[in-house]
Length: 135
Image (cartoon, rainbow, N blue to C red; front, side):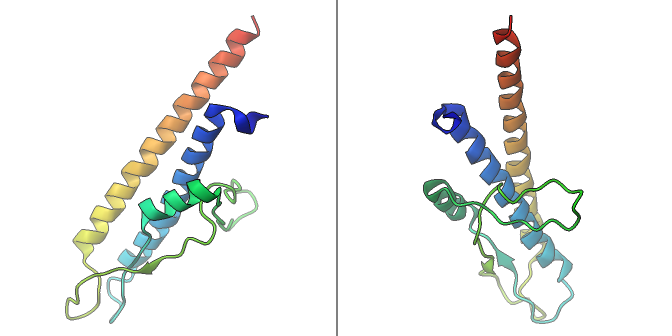
């Protein structure tokens, strides 16, 4: 019955937002790491559209664990969300604008941090309710 509780939907939305932010971070970081690759086309994830699809469909994100000791994040976001070629401008060498990529990285980082902070606050409230309920 926890799925019926309002905080559960909030937790799920935050979980998916965090997972999608992680995936977008990897895509943007890949763009930055390919700054010296001739002809490389930057990729991106339409964060807003992907998150809306995930929340409407209950879709989850498949994240790979590179080490069995890492936290299992397979349930934290957007399965099937694919990075698509970004509409950029040819700079004579490739399709990467480093200023634009750094801006995307910063924006994504803000979304991630805000989501994590909100999740931590929600968990603290839940802990307090549980602790006070036992009195």
